[in-house]
Length: 191
Image 1 (cartoon, rainbow, N blue to C red):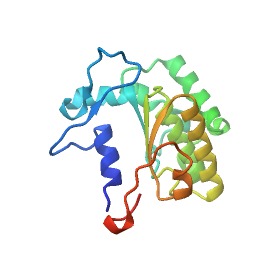
Image 2: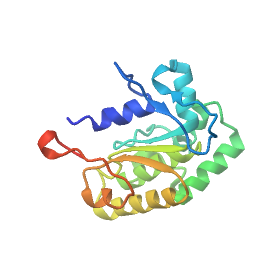
Image 3: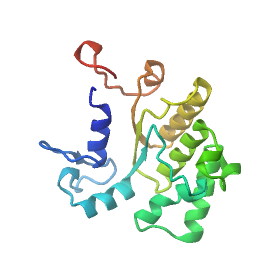
Image 4: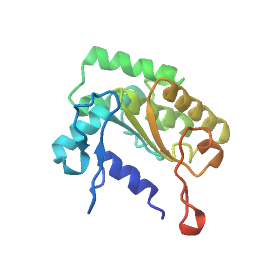
């Protein structure tokens, strides 16, 4: 009810603005680089931009049930025009290993736990080497041990220079990151 998911959807261009603008200016892009007006991109431009720059992790995983975990991770390069059979497969396997689920690469989502599905969603979000990772309650459906594992993976990604925008209700997890935006309870629900 506070608009947290809506904010993430607007940042990623999944939802369109009715007013205002969203501009991205990547650090290190050079001072001559113009900000990218996400709000003004066509659907095709937006899909390409999102595929090249953003990895999205949903609370409900959003995995394709009939595809193997490996195939699920390889979807973003296929959708964004960067799919190369051997290279994409190798990268997907490396990412599944990174999130400690490589031994299950050929299983379908129904045959693994919720925590394992979330790890697959993280691997899928990373396959195109995005500049920004958007995570909507990525630990909301997980037990505390698995949630801690996911947060450690996020901390490693931040150490590697990734930017993560994450919505969470867990103040303990939020405190672990360098910047926080809080929405006070008396003005609405959530953080």
